[in-house]
Image (tube, rainbow, N blue to C red):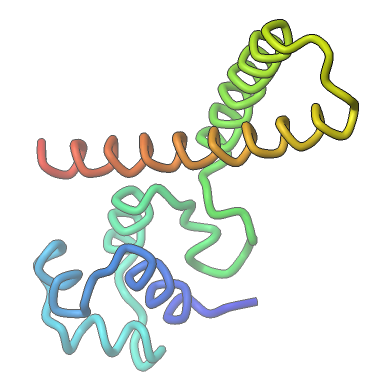
Length: 135
């Protein structure tokens, strides 16, 4: 399993942030972020909670206790929304093109699944940005 420092660095880079930018978001110095990422010191529980909330990941994931990034409630919610939207989208689309082969249907389903994942990711990022800007 990864360390908190490795995971902090991972989510920082996934969000295209420098150590300095991440520090500014949370009122910390670049040096503090560097110490955390290099496992030289451990951040406070308060910082871990704020970090998890800001990046929409679970504290357990940050600590390396699980490989599931999303908090359990968010994971269940996203899964339910995704299943509902993907079933609806696929059924509607297939009704418009009824004479597809099984291989073509499978290919379309894979493409729709991928597109829906991208949409959900973009929505989550926008919601996270709005949530932070409102604070």
